[in-house]
Length: 135
Image (cartoon, rainbow, N blue to C red; front, side, top):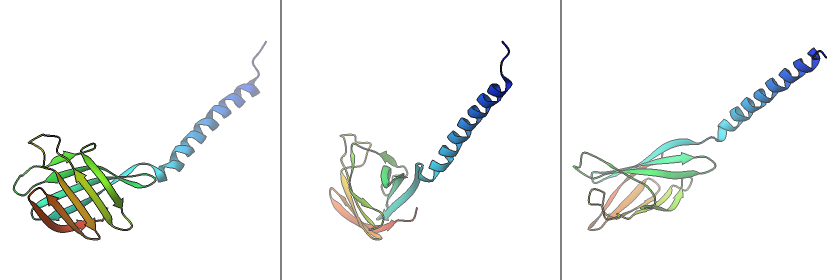
């Protein structure tokens, strides 16, 4: 029995159609794909840079901490970095960091931001500074 050329063409067409649908689905979802941005606090020589992941709603992915005169920075992540509040529209941020007992990392601190101003509370002092919400 000889293969039906019409069935072979239909099978190839279905395969191409499936590929085209998959490509369109990926392209259509790219508008909500994971993207990143950055926010930052600067005050008293301290610089804190935040990496923000955006999908359905923004989330803080990690933070870089640089102390005055250190010349280097530390990347801080969960579980030692806790985000108590984060609202880009209201320009509100409250982050707490707990040092896990590593002397090479920053001491415990809290950063509280309202609008364009922030307060960095360290164990023995508080530092005020500016916060940049532009991503």
